[in-house]
Length: 258
Image (cartoon, rainbow, N blue to C red; front, top):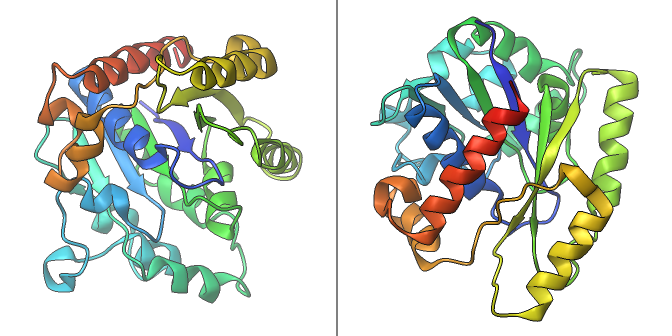
């Protein structure tokens, strides 16, 4: 077993990136796939979204900061979540300082790839939640991955910045990771009552064609509430529209990564 590694990224914030990483990981684990979620965003939202207190250093132990600085191995940073088959490697805001620290060091672009290689045999899927920026951390994530998943909000300016991200992806493929593939584009915060949402979704489909997932993630109160309770939406309210959408979306991901 060697994990399929998927990074979730969009340089625009607030597009449902972390929500997608958390819920995809949750539903992969529900499907009996051994899954690791790597929180690689200094905001640490995936960590707190799973109910882990980022500020309590004593109970937190090693995080992705120590892994990237080489002060801890990947296995030391991984902890089980309360869900079967679902592990987490947490992040804290200190990860931003670590990024600055490794800028002048050797092998700064492949730190994450090398760390993941040490545990890849233990998992079916590794999902990496990347920061909403084109940073050194983002490049590390792209180099470490087999697939890039792009959540796009169905709102005005949705595709702004996407071209730049795809350029960066092409560059990474050319220079460092020829195997990186665009897994697909996921339309998030979709509101079928507005013509804007439909227009943007049509535009996404026109631009990305068959790479657009057929499942759209609706604007849903339950999806928005779940992180404040420290749980994925599927554990918070599995009958909500949001939970059902993420479950369907996960089926598509499984199909595309066969």
